[in-house]
Image (tube, rainbow, N blue to C red):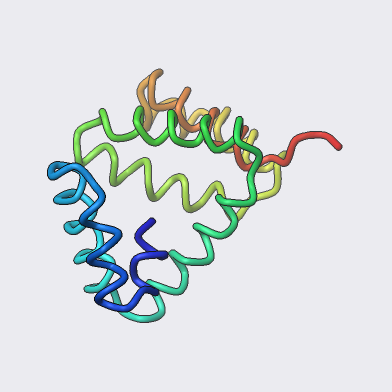
Length: 130
């Protein structure tokens, strides 16, 4: 929605926002302001990720949303650590991701719930069998 709103004229944006309940509108406007404050390269990177997400089957989108909700339940400092690990895992192939998640280093750095989150994240990265 943020990307779509960002691409609208001010008049179109206002019409779209006026249809939202007040609390939802406030959250969307806050996210839009955050998006607008990003450097152009970061905005483009985020747009690319959103396009990839939009192409996922609905069940994988739902799984990703649940994963993100779980991620947000961790304290900020742990979320930062998990985010760094997510970025590392995203660059690895499936076997290397599994090895990293199952490593002694990973088990010592992350609590059990965090390890499960990383495993679930890894499962979302792997395309389903054709």
